[in-house]
Length: 177
Length: 336
Image (cartoon, rainbow over all chains, first blue to last red; front, side, top):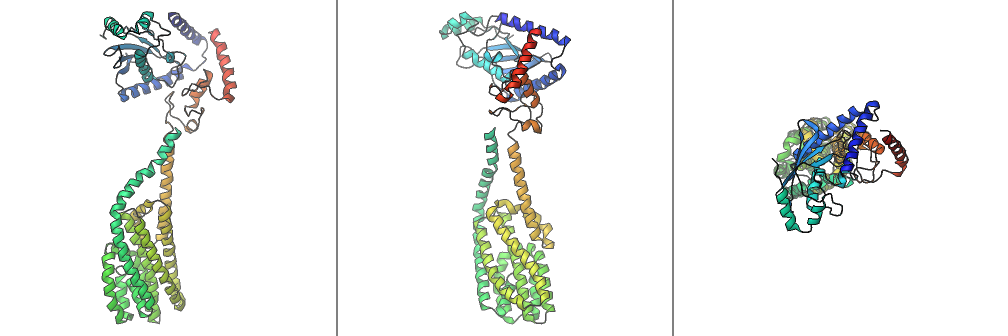
């Protein structure tokens, strides 16, 4: 996953440098439309009053959000709350946002750096998704991990024993400051 | 999306129905009461029609009872035999009870005809023909009053079977009346025929239209008409006001349907949140029904060409463009 991340980062950097030479897409107009889309999403998110998830831009930068999700009821994550960072590319929503756990999360599909392995954040991304659906998907991922392709093998191995897993979650959980 | 539009299109009718039903209950009583009264009056007319002769004038005089009171005063004073005066109060009281509420509305509409007829009766040499013509004209004004009556009734309620029965009853009575008055018209001088026929005919046709409207078109058809009436009354232009109102209703109905049909289409593109213009909102690129603006569609075609709503590739015919563009974009990636 880390290698993939590096790869994408490299590509981003390459794209940034190449954009200096030639502009394949009219970037300013794109940024404008991304801005509108993100503002609209923020408005929808605040109006919907969705319980268990929240998100808000960090430091007046509409391209970087801080989100929180709380563990669903009747899961080993019940009562815990996780902070996430969302950063939106300039071609959002045609490309997915980069979402990471900022709070450590002991989960089969989350690595120690907080990277999330979730198909809709990668190849199954659709521009019809938004922050709300992403956060809800991650929230449901907590309770229903995909243990067949884990990033955290220890968590995947422990998942079958829910009592032990719960203890591990409580032990490793560091509440949001 | 299609389901939404259907549901929305259907909404108005269920919404109006409970209201109608609720009103119907309240209305049925008054309608029946009125109908019974009308039946009594109709019987009276019919019996008087049968009796012919001097009684016929009574029939004419009976009809527009309250509205044309002044006219009958003058006519009665001039030409009516005593018999009529005796009979009148009996019918008058009955009609009074029924017509009182509407007398305000009817009097302006009826007075012109009654005045002309009274003038005609004054002008004409034979009192009898004059009287009969006044009878016929008052029968027209009677039908006019019928229009008023039904109109005011639909104002209170939304019109129902009871009202229809009333119409039929009146139509029957008027048909009987018409036969009579037509025979009278044959006797009448031409000028009077000219006076009365144009008034009689339009009102009749209007009444028929009204009946048809009532049966076929929605029941609220006359409510705006009632609101419109006070302006239309002085000219006795019901034949104008009715079609106008029915048009207005059709128009509003069409408008309501249109808005209901438009609402399910999103106002903004779900991808870029820009407003969808007319081209965009009529643009349906994927059978799944997911709509988006043309800019975002083009953008997606340049990217992976999958519908955001269902992730399927956009149509095969556009596949060529997609693949060529994708190939180009792929070729660009290594160059980056």
